Each structure stands twice: as C-alpha cells, then as structure tokens.
Length: 383
Ligand code: NAD
Ligand code: USQ
Image (cartoon, rainbow, N blue to C red; front, side, top):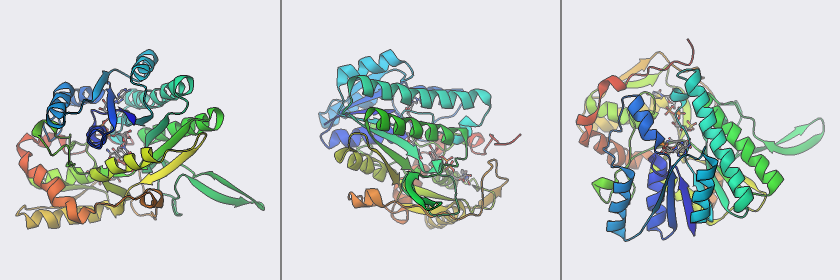
C-alpha cells in the first residue's frame, strides 16, 4: 500500500514513516520543515541531535534498502499539495502535519492565528485534494484526546448516544478543549466529518493522548535515525520533560496540584495504531473516531513514578509544584474509552516497563545538550 505521511519529519511522523517502510509499505514523506524553524525561533533544540531530513532518509535507504520519497513544502500551498499527491498517488494519507503545541498557540494573537490557519486550512486543502483526485483514499488524521476536555462523565470514542425529550440519536461527543491549539483539532474534526457526510470521503480521526518515549525499533537502528525529544516549556510534553529534568537534576515541574489526569501512550504504540487504522480503513462516507492511548495518569503520579525510577538509577529527583501557567481543572473526573484500537489488535507497551529504557536512559545520555533556561514554562494562558 502507498502511504503518504504528512509531517513525517516530526516526532510521531518520523517514527511512523520508518515503521511503515520497514513493514513493506511504500512510504513518502511530505513536510514543510517548519517545526525546525519554530525551534530556531524559540532558541530551543530537541534533546537528541536530529540529522537533516535528507541525511536521515539516505541513512534509512543505506540500512534498509528502502526508499522513502520526500516532498518538502507546505500543505497550506494547495498547488504544491495537489502536485505532490498526484505524483505519489497515495492509497492512505496519515496527517501529522500541524502546529501541535498548546503553549505555542497561547503565546499571543499571532501564534493563535498561525496555529489555527496552519492546521485548519492545511487539513481543508487536503480534504479538497482527496475530493477532487483521490475520493477512495483513506485519510488517517491525528486528532487529540484534548478535544474532549475533562467532562464529568465517561468519554466515548467520538460519539455519544443521547436521549432527549423521548427521542434518541448518536451524536458527536461534546468538545471542551483547553487551548487554541486543541480547538484547531476540533475545527479539523468538524471539517473532516462534514467532508465524509457530504462527499463520501473515508476518514479515521485518531484522538491521541500525550505521547512519550523516543525509541522505536527503527529509530534505534542508527544514531542518524534518532527521533526528536522535546523538553522545553513550549513543545516539551509532561512525561518527556520530567525525565529530562530528572537527568539534569532540575526539580520536576508539576503544574499546580498535579491532579490533572490525561491519557498517555508509548511512541511504539503510536506507530502500531496508525498501521492498524490504515489496514482496516473506514468505509466510504464514514467518519470513524478512535481514542488512541493506552493508560491514564495524573501528572502528580507521573512525577512520583519518574522520581522512583530516577532514584533507582542513582539520580537525585525532587518534585516541585509550580503555579499553573494554564487554565485547567486540577482535580476532576477522567475516564476515557479506548476499545476500538484494542479490538483491532493493539498490544500496549506499559509505562512501568519503558520508563527507564525508552526515556531516562536517553535523557541521561544526552543531558549535556540540555539548556536549563528552556525548562521553566514562560507562556501563561491568562495575562
Ligand atoms: P511535531 O511538531 O514533532 O511534527 C509535526 C510535523 O509537521 C513537523 O515536522 C512540521 O514541520 C510539520 N508541519 C507542520 N505544519 C505543516 C504544514 N502546514 N505543512 C507541512 N508540514 C507541516 O509534532 P508531533 O509531536 O509529531 O505531532 C504530530 C501530530 O500528532 C500533530 O498533529 C499533533 O497534534 C498530534 N499529536 C501529538 C501528540 C504528542 O504528544 N506529540 C499527542 C497527540 C496528538
Ligand atoms: N504539565 C505539567 N508540567 C509540565 C508540563 C505539563 O504539569 O512540565 C501538565 C499540563 O498542565 C497538562 C498536562 O501536564 O495538564 C499535559 O500537558 P502536556 O504539555 O504534556 O500536553 P498537552 O499540552 O495536552 O499537549 C500534548 C501535545 C499535543 C497533544 C496532547 C494530547 O503537545 O500535541 O494533542 O498532548 S492530550 O493531552 O491528550 O490532548
């Protein structure tokens, strides 16, 4: 199967492109490389030294004998996107190519606008190319668990059956996202759902939780294939940040009380989930939603797990509770369903088994690259 990975130079996309290529799919990567540009603007770098995309791909070809075609450009440029897709003729498109940081989207008006235009217009362009040229191609789109927010009822997979005044319907699950970034994903979901209903496109929205880890079978084959690992206050995510903080002796930055519960998964499960989704495509006209995560934790408990694992490696790990820069509930109910991917055969990696190998060991190995000035959060949701 021919699979186009949009955003294939990024954290999830790079691991996925190599995994699918290794499995025998014919893979192409399309990426504007804008994420590398945003890192430069923020004066930050991934913990792990990532090679230029062309070098990475050449190394992959030398090692595996497999070619991954590369299209460098922006999906907001419709002509570029259309011509790239006409050349490659994908049967499935996996779309990771968005601005994905909540703090980045909350810096100021410009960053909120950039995030929503980049994400919503890019996805809309993609829907039009699919409609005009590839109506049977399966769109696998990365959404986020954060689309749902933290409602006081169980979170279903995309839809909820509601009885109202004696009538019943299966409706899109209510969305209460917590940043302009998370909102951009809600807007995408609505646009994709509409395109499925009106044009009969087939799509799967993968509402992914927070991803952790840096090691996959393929990215571990050679240092030139290493994946990015963000630890800074803008692009770094909770658990990845905690491990890097533990490695350099910085107190773990739990925001507020730490009772915020989120859904998590290992990057090795991200790549597998994408494969499961493309192998059993949505039907024409179907907008399918999978909640893509394996375990739920609150950030305070995560910090305790990192402290325990860090101490077992001889690190001296302290936990700090910072004033929360975000506006979010710190004590709340959170119970999300995730049976769709398990039913398709996902066998989860558990955090308790991978914390040391996939995260703490990498953090210690590359700790000399850490710029401690980048650790504390600088973006506030209010004022
Ligand atoms: P990333 O920033 O590492 O990668 C995104 C890639 O997309 C980058 O290489 C960037 O250059 C590219 N890109 C962005 N806008 C583009 C555009 N307009 N045209 C072409 N390329 C563009 O992000 P990631 O962590 O790999 O996340 C990938 C996707 O998964 C995102 O959609 C994100 O919302 C979603 N997601 C990520 C996580 C996580 O924890 N990392 C969790 C849930 C969902
Ligand atoms: N948090 C801390 N300390 C930190 C960093 C974060 O306590 O140092 C807390 C945050 O306040 C929040 C939780 O941890 O309550 C998660 O924050 P995060 O930065 O790890 O994740 P988030 O902003 O939600 O975004 C990340 C990805 C995004 C993806 C999302 C999945 O950047 O692309 O969509 O995870 S989810 O959280 O399920 O929406």
